[in-house]
Image (tube, rainbow, N blue to C red; front, side):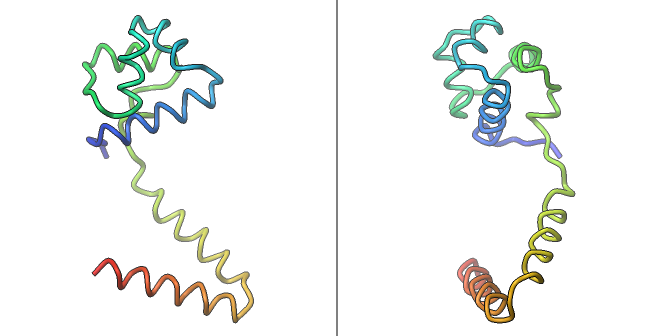
Length: 109
């Protein structure tokens, strides 16, 4: 599924850049952008042209999918991981965790 939230895209770029061990200035220079423009992109305060997305992806060695799409199976996988952790808890800790989750979910209503 495509991500339309500019901040989410910026956060993905930030994470990928940090994993690559690059600074904003290094990515900006390699992509032919100003430092300010790239910083604004990571902050999610500007929209990028397709050409800019492709340049940044080339510098970071990722595909546009890596920054502009989300895997719909991720929440289900995370839920399964949390259930495994919950089942490993003591009965008392499990009850506390379930109560916390219940309170949180009720606050969303």
